[in-house]
Amino acid sequence: MTKPASSPARRPRGSITPDKVVAAAFAVSERDEALTFQAIGAELGAHPTAVYRHFRDKDELMRGLVDALLREQLDELGEPRENWQDELRAIAAALYDVFLRHPQIGQYAAARTARTEHEFRIVERLLAALRGGGFPKREAALCYRLFADACLSYAALDSAFASLSPDTQAGDRAAWQQEYRSLSPAEFPQIAELAPDLPPVSERETYLAFVDTVLFGLETRLARSTRPA
Image (cartoon, rainbow, N blue to C red):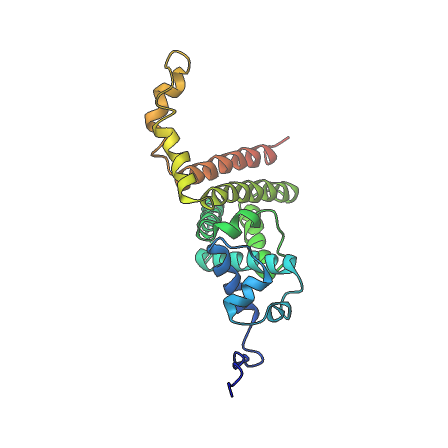
């Protein structure tokens, strides 16, 4: 008589933790698979209900993934810098690097509020840098939103590009080498003159130049807000 096939061994209770679920979700997303609880369960070698024990729904899971990005950003930052511009520049660079390491999640993270301790700590550091730099209370609050939203938006944009297929990315990059260089100088004189200089500019280099431009704007606002009446 043929023996029935044995069922997979059950994982010991408590062996699946929230951190393991988050790690599995990152693994699934980085294979460009649909981020479903079934796929995450398969990655864990467990039933999808194991995921629900830690995350009630997809929204809570996404906030958990965003929180993981913020924790990674904090780990990279280290101790606060004394100069407020250096501190904001470091926070912005760490944000970009983390998003681009996990572009499938990074492209969505900018629109979410994790409301976790890691997010609170980053917001606290940004506000402390601005207040330490001499920004009045209301101006510091406004400039925090300007800076944070600008950096998040730019990092999410480049994350979305990094999430495209390699062929699509290559085609878009090649356009600067081919289509743009072949345009008529008579009709598009500025493009024709600058086209050779456009392709070498990397996404990260452009982002950091963007951050410096935003910082220059904040410096202008600081000078105006503290100018004697």
